[in-house]
Length: 119
Image 1 (cartoon, one colour):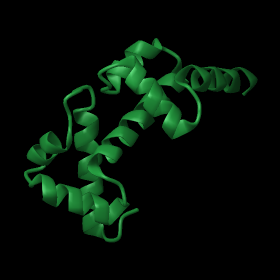
Image 2 (spheres, helix red, strand yellow):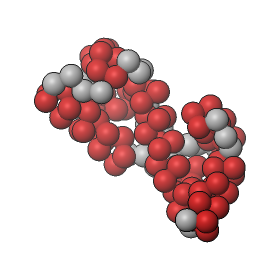
Image 3 (cartoon, helix red, strand yellow):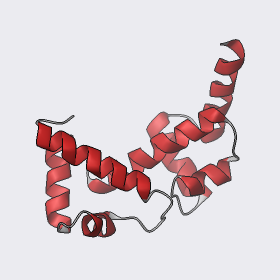
């Protein structure tokens, strides 16, 4: 996704920042920009130029990837995972997950558990 070493470093910093603040349900573009010491507009332009995603899409995708990993482990309940990934409600989490992965969190978890069993 990155176009240069600087872009790569920026994406790494961005990903680390999102991951560090993942459980903060109030993490939005404004807050992310403040943490990274840049304006909201600058952050938006930089992310859009590198990834073709909006900052909020990037935050959501990062959260959903984290949730998918936790679902695959199967150690937590879905409602716990939704909060661990920073979603303010389980229904919002389920809707976003379905949109991203084309299956519900429950279906994903069952699929991953079956893969482990059939391994």
